[in-house]
Length: 175
Image (cartoon, one colour):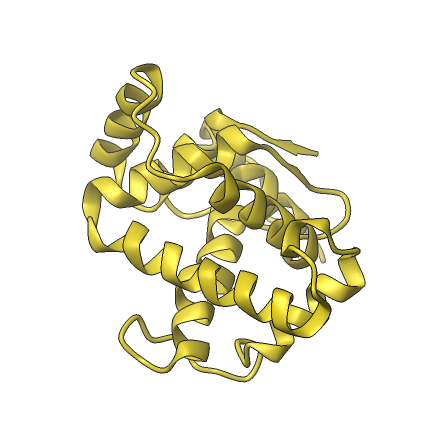
């Protein structure tokens, strides 16, 4: 399953960020991307660790979602970039290599070494809490609020997504 720009727009709209979805679309059309190539590569590498193997995330998905989030919260991109720097620095210290060049199992180890797997998300908290907030939780939220991602966990019609009247006109299942 490939996540595209359209999926990112649906994620933003499903989050109640409809205006930010429009802003993200305009920014992408004008190529006002706020993510560096290194940031995009790192996020894509992180998605390979955090997302199920059946999900293929694209750069357009990441860029559109981040631009949409930035439209609502300008400090978001700064926090995200700082958290990504922590991950890249940890990777260099622990492996001597760039995070995006690591095998998936090593990426998982590096992410765990930041402490994000044990931290509670907090945008103004410790380094581990900020990595958890800006990277881990945000990537997972972006996936599971899309109709495709929600289908992975059995909620094909997530809150805020208009799935059509057919779903409401069916009798309850016997399960």
